[in-house]
Image 1 (cartoon, rainbow, N blue to C red):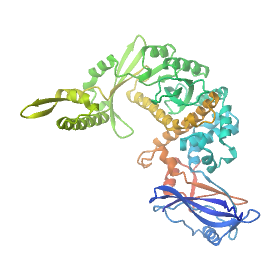
Image 2 (cartoon, rainbow, N blue to C red):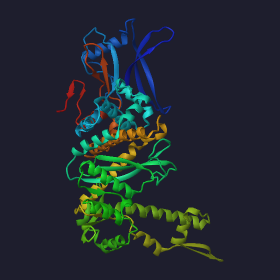
Image 3 (cartoon, helix red, strand yellow):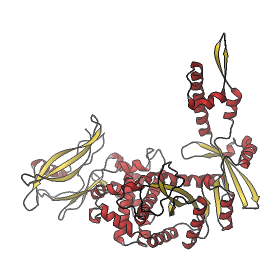
Image 4 (spheres, rainbow, N blue to C red):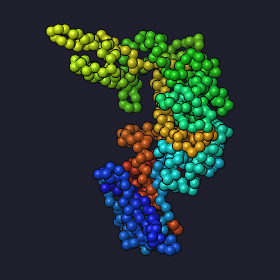
Length: 557
């Protein structure tokens, strides 16, 4: 049983009324396969609420003061025990409360680094800003329904905010359209001018019956439910979400784009570059964006005839070292750009890409599937889902003497290998550089991944009130969480993978979850649990201050 951390808790016996104090250790029980607790008594409270410590804890405090105390090691690293502040001998400080501060330290750094709190204060009272950020931290770390946040918030020192389910609903109801727009204006003004913006639409399913925006439409999650649509705008240069709007679930993408343009003009966003997915590619959409004075970068659907012709023309010259683009994962993508001037869009760049790693995987998987299908044909054990493969890639003959013979259709297999899969085209009226165009579009994907990470907390089945205003308030809080998660993801990715041990942003948060501050009554300063080796590594990577043994690691402001 490896101890991971401990809190100091108080338990009152019902029969005697005596309140006892314990060190409460949380650890993972490998035999039973779940997390559990082990408690160690350190004393009790007298009639006046003062602590009377037992011999074990008094000796422990004395050892701490002498600098000779250390907890049982955890995996070769110092585990979390109280070692930080020197306590006067013979004194017994009263423990007031303990707070889990590790995750808050990480997210506070993200929040302060991008001045997110300042933009919130431009639109909301300070008390509401504290509550919004606390809930956003919960969404980033837990990704669960708001109704389950109370205990999590209390353990992290947010009890004074009083965020019960009822208070949360009241907070969400106060997040009005005017306050949201005030935040958007402040937030967007803090971003680089003339930035390229990424645009995407996602749907959020709802069971609510009082939300005017909930309607049937194309559900991107494949759920047979009413939904609301979210149009999301993000920055290419900083990779952060900037703005969103809620639209009815049945509204078409074209109508959303027109609505978005009008709203951005009101927010004084005059010109930008539109990034979208293949679903936005249409002559009407691109002309509309161009006529409004904006630029665009969009992927061309594989079904478009001129794209197939363009790839065929340049396919032979793609595999050249001059076209190699190295990816963050250590692989390569080939890229080549063709420039044209068109009557509809003016100067236009067509960026052609090929992903050899993905292509090899597709071909390898296909070959393995062909081998299995051949075995099925020879054994006469056919599967309905493989019917097309049997008919396309095999020749089956039945003879009286030899019985059944199964042969591969080599021509059909070669055609599959040489098809245009893993080739794609980005069409842009703004970016002429092949590498920058790809990087910008992948930034859009990063934001989409971040949104999927926090989308679970928008489970509207768990909301006490399903009114339109409450739903809109909840979406705003999740949007703030999306900003924080995106900033953390960017911060982590800027650290070389080997240096951060290939940990993701979620693993950074998990590693520091047990780092605790212990508050003492009276004149004694707050003390902190000893950070584990993994926690020290995270704090070092993020340049966060902490204390370890006699050494203070204090970062400059």
